Length: 236
Image (cartoon, rainbow, N blue to C red; front, side):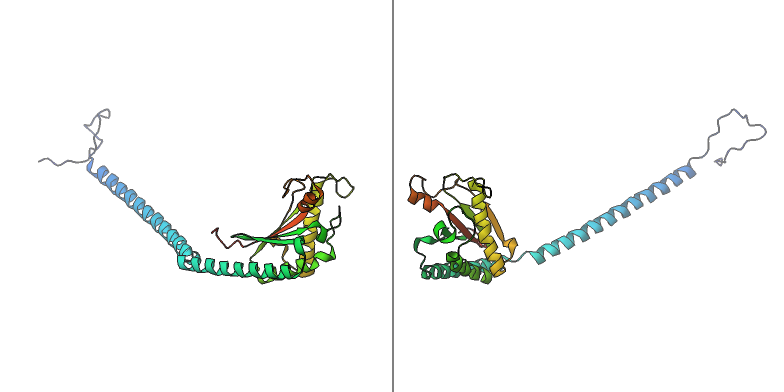
């Protein structure tokens, strides 16, 4: 068998003749390069896998650390409901003992305590400065809120349908909001409650309890509502 030698140029070889070089060496180089490329891709994939796996492990660990077990949630809910019921009972008894009659009413629901102050014990007609007659009510509410720092407070102002137009209060909207703000200022300035716990709303005459067809009904609609909410409780 004749050996396959690399063609050379020289005497006796035509310069126009196509020279075919052996393919063995070229294929070996290509195979080696392809193998190196494949190995590099494999390493890259392994690196990406381990990075992703590490990130997933950290997220999973954090989730386990920050998610309380179901039993803890149930216990927290039970404790929250017990505190809420205690506060409701105490507030009802304390406000009843103040002897305000129908000037202060307390209603309760699964997630909130609604305290309603009628105008005649809290504000002068057409004014937004809190009267001293309402101080005992607000002091009692403030004491309860100090013992329950998780409770949130919403204060809603309401008026009757008789129009008002003064320099300070161009409409019932402004009057109702100013009255809610007056209650807020008292609770913050006198008792140092955290302002971030409060929400204010002024509804004007838009949400009457009863039709504004008599003076007695209008008096019922002129009110400030204080809602104490426990955000840690789910609806029953």
